[in-house]
Image 1 (tube, rainbow, N blue to C red):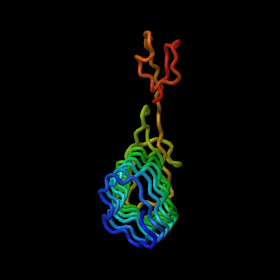
Image 2 (image 1 turned 120 degrees about the horizontal axis):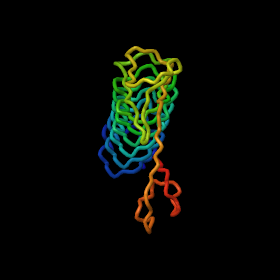
Image 3 (image 1 turned 45 degrees about the vertical axis):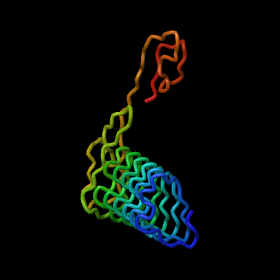
Image 4 (image 1 turned 120 degrees about the vertical axis):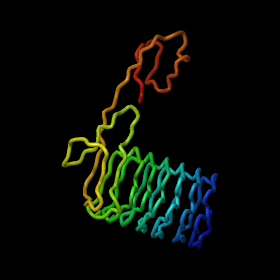
Length: 231
C-alpha cells in the first residue's frame, strides 16, 4: 500500500516483482513511469488513480494475469507497449476523452474480445491490436482520422467453431484478413461471423462411468448411449 501524498511512481519501480498480486495506489499519484509494473506476472487487478493523464509505455507489459482494467477519464494517451503481452486481459474500459493509442499497445492480448473505442480518439499506432486472436467486434469512431500505418486485425479463433469472416453494415458478405488502410475514416463496426459445430459422441458403456472422462459431457447418466459434448 503506497501512502497518500505520493505523486510519482518512477520508471520500473515495481517491474519484475513476480509475486506481487495487488497494490493500492493513492489518489495523489499523477504519474506512473515507464515500465512501472512490467512483468508483474501475478498482478490480477489494479485500480488506477483519477488524476493520470497518460498510461506510459510498457507500464503493464507482460502482466500475464491482469484480467481487466478501467482507465481513468483523465487519461488522454495510452503509450506504446502499455499492455503488450497481457494474455489474460479480457475487459478494457476506455476513457471518454482518450486521443491516442500507441504502437503495439495491446499486442498479444489474446483474450480481448471486443473494442469499444471512444469518439474522442484520433490516432492509433502500428499493430496496436495485433495478435488479439479473440477479437470478435471492432468499432472505429468517426473521430479516428489517422493511423501511423495500416491496421491489421488477426482472424479470431473460437473452440468448436469456424471463423467465416468479418461483416459490416454496408458489406454483409464475410471477408477475412481485416486490413484498415492508413488514413481511413472511422465510424465503422466490424463483426465476426462463425459457423459452430455440434458433436455427438457414441460409445459403449462399461460397468463404471468413472472410466470415461465426462467433464465436458452434458448431463451424463448410465442409461444414455449418446452424449452432447460442450465445445
